[in-house]
Image (cartoon, rainbow, N blue to C red):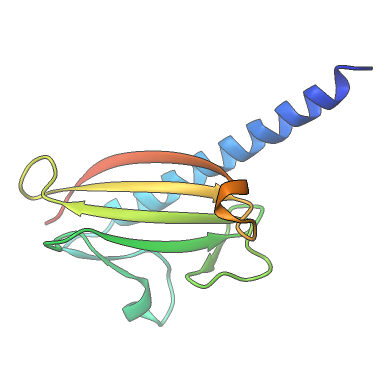
Length: 128
């Protein structure tokens, strides 16, 4: 009986890690499925807010929020948000025309940064 709380905590942590990996994969897949330097994180009509440029000359960071099932909620934090994905773009790193895309998925989104579990994922994408 003493191991039951430990097992429950391990199961919850495993679920958070798995959901975070799925969110990061979804972001990478969405960005890589598009062509051109301007790509979009969130579908919808507000393209100015949701646009990410892979050909910027300076680094940039955008946040996208997700619910408990991993569905996109948008770029504004809401009471339904469980996960926050911070997407950092570093152009021409390490090679010209390649963009380093780092996604850090944190949960719970409403908690202070120091009280969140965070998982970081990195890939390189062609900025063309």
